[in-house]
Length: 452
Ligand code: SAH
Ligand code: SF4
Ligand code: F3S
Image (cartoon, rainbow, N blue to C red):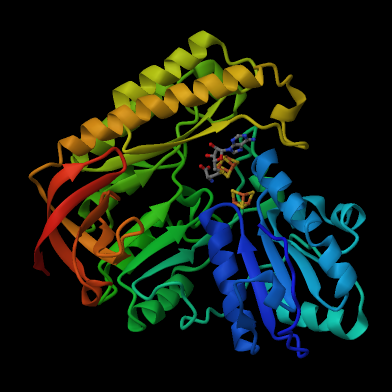
C-alpha cells in the first residue's frame, strides 16, 4: 500500500526508481528488462515510494479488478505529487496501451504513459519529462521490441524467463490481450539462442520461454520454423538443465510438437494448456477453436507419449450464457483430466472485445459460487495426486529458503511441484534429489538424499 511519504532522503539527480508490476509473467519479464535498462543508466532501484524520484507501475488489463488496483495506487500518489511535483509518475504496460491519453485525463498527476512495445525507450522518455516538464504518451503498437538484455540484472541467477514471441492473434472473444499486446511477432531462433547462451554463461540452469500463444511461435519467420525447432536448438545448449514453455493453446499445439518434446531430455514434463471451459457451447462463444472432446483426446495423446507429464489449466466461470449444465461439464472435465493445478477466474467483460457485446448475465453471486466450487475440487485433486508422490524420489532445482520456514529450502520438480526440504544455502541453484515424506495440496515435503 502506498501512503505515508517522506522526502528527507531525496536525491535530486533523478536516479532512484520504484517499480511495481501487476499481471502475468510476460509483464514481470518486461519489468525485469526495463529495470535492467534503467540500472545501466545509473538508476538505483528502491523498494519504497518515499525514496523514489521516479515511480513506475507496469500494469495489467486482463480483468477489471487488475485495472482498479492500479488506479487506486495512482490515486494514492496525488498528494505526493502535489508536494513534490518533480517526482515522475509513469504507467507502463497493458493498461497504458489500452487507456492511453485517458489516463492523463483521469489522473492528471501522471507524467508518462508507455505502452507494451515502447519500454525499451524508457530512459530517454524520463529524460524528456525531466528536462521539458511535459507529459509523454508512447503507445505505438507497431514497434518491434528490441531490448539488449542486461543479463547481469536478474532476480536470481539460475532461472530466467525469455520472451520468444510477443502479441497474440487468437482473439478469444473475452480477451483483451491481442488489443494491448498487438500482433504476434516471433524472435528468430538465433536471437533467442544467443540470449539463452549468454544467460547460461552467467549461471542460468533453467529457462522458461514465454509467449501468450507460444505454440504459434515461428509464424512469420519464414521457412516453416516451429516451437519444436526452437526447443531442439535450445536442448543442445551446454550447461542448461531445464527448459519450460508457456502458454500452450489446445487448438494450436501440434502432435508433432508433443512428439518432439517427448524426445528432448531438457524439456520439463509440464504443460500449461488452459481449457477455459468444459462446455462446447461456451467454448464456441469464447471462440477457442476446439471442443472439450478434442481437449481430452489431446491430453490422452500427450500422456501416452510422456506418461508422467503434469498439466495445468485456466478456467473462466460465469462467461455470458453459462448455464448450470455448462458449469457441470467443466466440473467433469476437471475431474477427468486431474490437473496438477488450475487458475480459476470470474468472467470480467472487457470493452472492445467480442464477448463484451454479449449480456454479462451470470450474476456475480453465481460466478463466486462456481469459482469456489472449482477451487475446492482442484484442491482435493491436487492433494490426492500429491499423496501419490509420498515415498518417491524427485529431482529438485533449489530456489532458496522456504518462505514459511527460513531453516528449510524450497525448489521445483521438473513437473512443477513445489518441494520443501532440509537444505543449505550452498545448494541454491543446484539440482538435488529429495524423497517425499509428507504432502499438502500445494507442497511436497521431503528429505535430501543427494546432490547431483
Ligand atoms: N495467453 C494466455 C494467458 C491469457 S490471460 C492464454 O491464452 O492462456 C490469462 C488467463 O486469464 C486466461 O487464460 C483466462 O483464463 C483469463 N482471462 C482472460 N480474459 C479474461 C476475462 N475477460 N475475464 C476473466 N478471465 C479472463
Ligand atoms: Fe487471450 Fe486467447 Fe490470446 Fe490467450 S490465446 S492471450 S486467452 S486471445
Ligand atoms: Fe495482463 Fe497484459 Fe499479461 S493484460 S495478463 S499483463 S499480457
